[in-house]
Image (cartoon, rainbow, N blue to C red; front, side, top):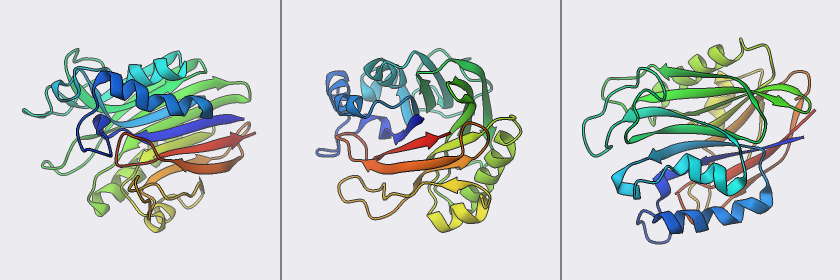
Length: 245
């Protein structure tokens, strides 16, 4: 069994006040996740070194809080988010402030991949980050993304992600804030298994826009015990699922 959590961090905004959490407040907000003991965490809307969030490397803070040794961040926006934005050429190329997605894992990583996603020039840049993990039940590919708020664009991006990740030769778990209701996700991923829970907004969730999808295969055949996790940070709930062999 592998436990995977997806979480849109909203760069650490505190739900109660709307202010960005200080590094200490951010660390305290993560404490509640330890009892859930996720093996893999997929993060979206993650700041790294951004002035607005106190310069925190948020993905690393999550990984350290949960004891997850293997970590990769992929930038969708490089530089201060309050200034000019540009698409990344290669994840990790820009050492300064950035904003994007991340995967943290308890299991060793056999391979990483990063791919920018298509979208209108005026839309926020989007990227998919993937990792093939060596789990006790065999290889498992995990992909993390945060799609456009424009439904038509998000559906096209989801189809691009689907095509990219199903070529890795292992079961695939796709996680993230897809900004799509379940009906559109089902239409774009007909052969995938889907976990269901209300994930947004965190104070009174009434819809699902965060998703966990499984392309099944040896060692990963079904999803179980899907549930949302309200947290002090973000306007999204965390979304936790078990992947069963």
